[in-house]
Length: 186
Image (cartoon, rainbow, N blue to C red; front, side, top):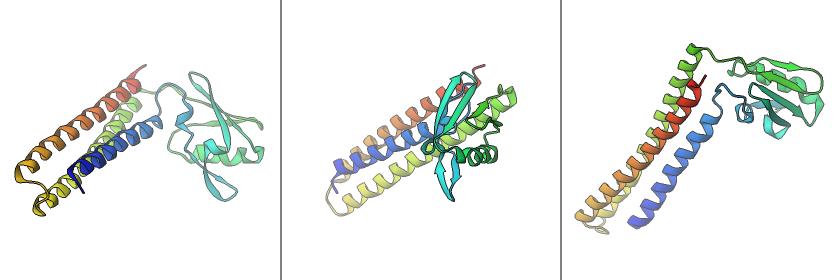
């Protein structure tokens, strides 16, 4: 594998880590109602765990209310149970046709807890990026041992790899800080 292929692969995997963090942070509850909060919630639908978005339409009717309209009305009870079992702390209201979820205002303590969760997820993503860097560096060292690249080239590649890693670590920090501001917004 050539050095450029190693860099291309490493950058692709680092981008994936950033995107995974963004997706994961959309499921964290902020003060506003967002369908992303419950879209991936697994619902026991005819014995199969199915993401909620595949069995119902989810809408944010206003800043604090989500409305869930299942395509199969028999699934209402299963959806309600899944929401109650989740660790989101939400209380669904089932009227026989739709489920309405009113999001309570976040307390200052809950906001601080959510910020801790955001920071933990950012740190986990940083570890993933650093693991990509380590893998790429190991491959570069193998190239040098096999005499495919020189010692000087290894040094240049290592510096370039570190700059790439720093770029994605900064991006992860920015994503995390944006989510923290969103959570702390009253």
